[in-house]
Amino acid sequence: MGIFSSIKHAIFGEAKAATVVEDAEASVPASQTASASVSAVEASAAEPAQAIDVAAILDAAVKASGEKLDWKHSIVDLLKALKIDSSVAARKELAAELGFSGSSSDSATMNVWLHKAVIRKLSENGGHVPADLLD
Image (cartoon, rainbow, N blue to C red; front, side):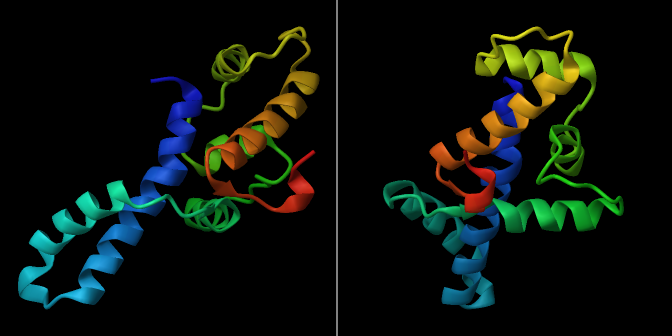
């Protein structure tokens, strides 16, 4: 699995799982929750995906981290909030995965490009991101 796939899973996978379980638990008695969860998962596969609030998920991840992270401006902080490797090597791998054509030795330029590219890709994949973060 690529790094962007890990990012998507951390955001969309967690949000979808929480939504499915909450919907299932709200609609059936507690004694039937497990079977309802399976039914809800099966049903959700057939339904169109709803936009996931990326900002809310990342804000919650930052809060849970206990660190002061600025995911809205920093790719390193975004990755840290999601508990994904934020090392230079990982960011170079992510840059290659997303098609960065600049020099990976210019980490400042690469990081700015990466942040914009990740936010844009999250939006393209069904995430709702703040308009001011899109180009």
